[in-house]
Length: 387
Image (cartoon, rainbow, N blue to C red):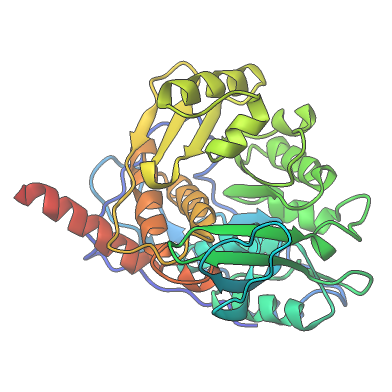
């Protein structure tokens, strides 16, 4: 397996500003070499390659990111991997109705794999930890993540469950409806996560979780991260079930969309005022920061005790497929955050990544590279100057 990366040129025009933040421990220097141990179910070929990373200049001057191996703690995504079965349709079928799809194809996806692929494509060192089956769908996911420079040292292959998969019904306006089959994402997990895997979590710069794997797994991972001072972002997407309070106790940022926020709080979210009220209920549950994805209306970051930070969506000529846009947004936000950018810059970076994602069909295939995101941000700044 090859761990690849792209060097970031100092000529990029979107500069880094490091500010004090309620997120801690993201400027640590670590060495993962003692952590990476392999058994027969892992991928030992990864151990031959050094970890790609970037050095962050802590000054407040405008200093671009520069490569410096061995200094940036990685993004660690612990979560789901699916084979997404795409069906392009004009409309959803009525009850009892059979309709024909225009096309159908299978692509790698799943919220966890999507977020890991996004981190890799943004040239940030990224690990993905999860489970796939011993089947063609599992091989599809492994190949897609390897091609995106994602480290799979601790990806488990299980014999007793198939790889998770999803049926994505993609309508002509780019909107989608998705049905998920959990497979290995929800089954065959060990009762206790291995110390080797949790050590990777403890040495992360930031950890991303979602709800397409068992809550019991997420709780163990979140506890391990908290014990090491590593920030955790929980994407609220996945199973439609109440959130365990124990899980909410160990996360730093909760990231729902409008409907997920409504289900979590039992509150309407039809306006920004109502969204603010619903977020207030999250704060009462112990979640200090809530990153709400608002689709075409953009996003907003709510930090308890502060004014919300709004970020409009970046408009595109045509929306092709919204699948994976939320995952792209969350992962890009995490990458910007661990690199030390301000909250506003994190939102801008995430919005640019998501706007590029919706213009390409498929989840992982649509993830943008860092240069494309930076070019879009630069063009936005240039457009504003000319108005």
